[in-house]
Image (spheres, rainbow, N blue to C red):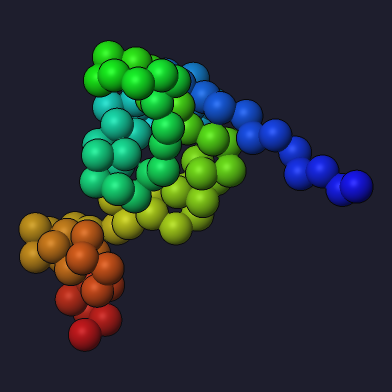
Length: 90
């Protein structure tokens, strides 16, 4: 029987610390709210901690984190955030 490793769950604060403090917990919370970073709640209720699996954090870093830094102007930001690339790509 092959078993998959059990994902390690991190709170937003722990995830921010795991990233070396380069990305604040508030940014991670905004990404969760935007639907780009998958999470679970520790228990039912809006006051329960948000937990992020380390695999979900790795996926977000690889696919979405760079897009937050890529834009230089509001026009370019709009295109990047919509997944269309920059204006120069069009």
